[in-house]
Image (cartoon, rainbow, N blue to C red):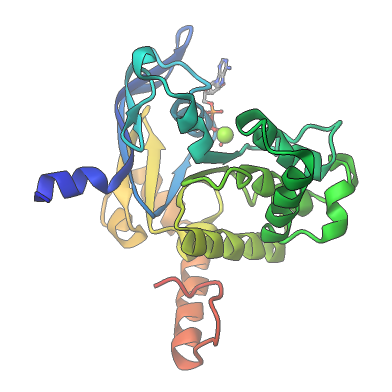
Length: 282
Ligand SMILES: Nc1ncnc2c1ncn2[C@@H]1O[C@H](COP(=O)(O)OP(=O)(O)OP(=O)(O)O)[C@@H](O)[C@H]1O
Ligand SMILES: [Mg+2]
């Protein structure tokens, strides 16, 4: 395979020249971004910079004014090429969860299964849902609870179970650790990393959580000025002199996250953990 072709195959999502606007409010202008196969890409940017709109554009919930979006080699904006099966190759955890409040956790997880595989009988559908619930670290009893009966952390896991229901290749997570206490957030990060490794997922992870960026992301894309202004590892981003990037990663919180990550790396080098754990990525 030629080097150029190999590079093409390495790209799971390719966005070129994307423009999105709401009336006079231009959110993205000529935005381009590549997400590589098998990576966890962190997506950061100030509130309102268009991270969620970007995710919604990729999964077809937002029709852009112009641009090109290819997911796993398929064009998302070309109606002639539109293929429903592509939607079964990703799972989404929306900002805020977006669970159906009148359905139990198991029923929520079964919704995509019923949509894409209507012929699967209800017993098998339930079995698959129970497996995804366990995979997401929820206790079995949570399956028959309604979202209103769950804690914030459990709701996120239920949303994750639903996102995993179709065995996706791509996982979209919009602010998965927002609102979780630091221990809950760290556990969710560990789970994301574990799933990405064991299931070979490509993860598009929108977050404000600096610990998440340091601990589990392979690269980070920064949204500002209606574009992706930089993409790379955190050290690569720090080498740029964009003021927002410097303030974000070098501000008091950014430095604290970097120090704690460096401490964790040192501790793991001295006392390697027997199994995978937070901070054990590289
Ligand atoms: N359906 C919509 N109609 C009109 N404007 C919208 C719509 N959805 C998003 N916007 C606007 O697009 C901009 C980007 O919104 P988006 O939700 O993508 O921000 P974000 O980067 O995800 O922010 P946050 O970090 O707060 O979640 C905002 O100005 C928002 O008001
Ligand atoms: Mg958002």
